Length: 189
Image 1 (cartoon, rainbow, N blue to C red):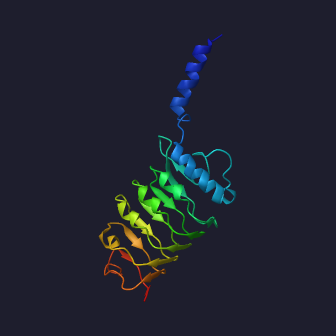
Image 2 (tube, rainbow, N blue to C red):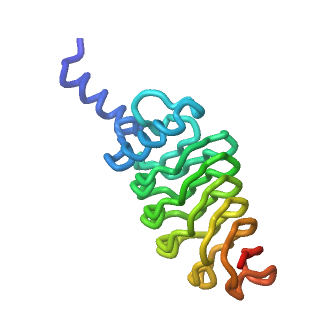
Image 3 (spheres, rainbow, N blue to C red):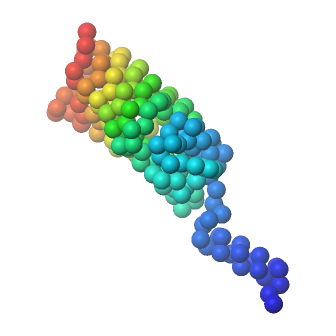
């Protein structure tokens, strides 16, 4: 009969090899709990936040890397705690019914490559904190009710962007044309 120490050693080795002992950090748990409170019913998220939840993908270290939450008829607002997801590379929340403003904390997501919030009912201005996202490849905010001035940093970004069909103030930056790397029109005086 194997000793208790031998059994525990095998169990620990199995956990380490399979990666199931890797846990979300405290900030990620807060963010996922806040999203669970807002959208958990529609997404079927129950219990403790987990990388096993539908539409959540984690990296090999157990940190949230991707949220694919599009086409789920999600309502309500994007929680400010979303900025706690420090390893997030893809935030896909397009084609829902989200309202409220885009949280300034999104600018904390230094690994973010894809920010797809189009076709919702988001309002307010584009947070200037988004200019901190140096890894950003795509910024899609079209088909919302965003207002204010299109920030000047939009013209300096290397990301592809689409800001069309919002309620931005005129004039638009010169980069907001079909010849630039993104689109912003129309604007309202």
